[in-house]
Image (tube, rainbow, N blue to C red; front, side, top):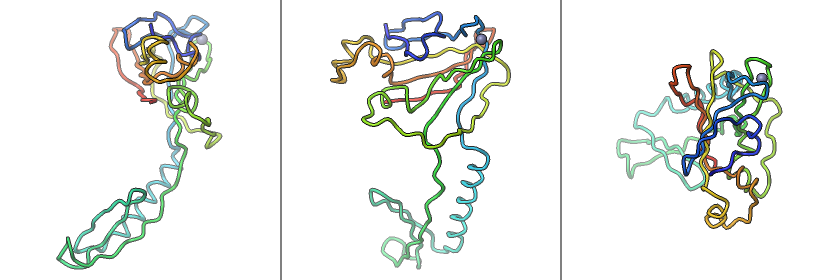
Length: 211
Ligand SMILES: [Zn+2]
């Protein structure tokens, strides 16, 4: 059976072995099974900066009666303004596009117990999953304070599904990594978090491919 990632062991309940997947519910150490969930996102200020950049770029392209084309040199995109009707081989001029604002790239999902208020990180892309665990250098914190967006209106039951190789032996054979049981448990390749309604209806709130 796929092992439960180490940071989730304290809260994992009702684990189900699905072969290449492992499914379990969350239960707070206080016994509660209802949680709110939130996910990191761009802040309103960052979103505004992104929109302002998009608008500025759009303005650069406002006067292109013969159309535009886009090329990629393997590293950067280039925008070309056509200067005549003859598009393919006609004369064109590059429009320099300033780079957009750069924001944090990592993802954090956390839940909060509806009874005792205990907060728990369910997933942090810098720490959990195959890419994070096998990274030569751990990803540095890009920003101290992440902005979080609520993903639940009312407290819900949460179910987590993990994908990984079914046992340590096959993990070692597939990856050529000499991991121990705990490192392998944390090197899962996919995580899905679902809410489960009192009637048993499930909804995906978060999915992340980590490999
Ligand atoms: Zn609790």
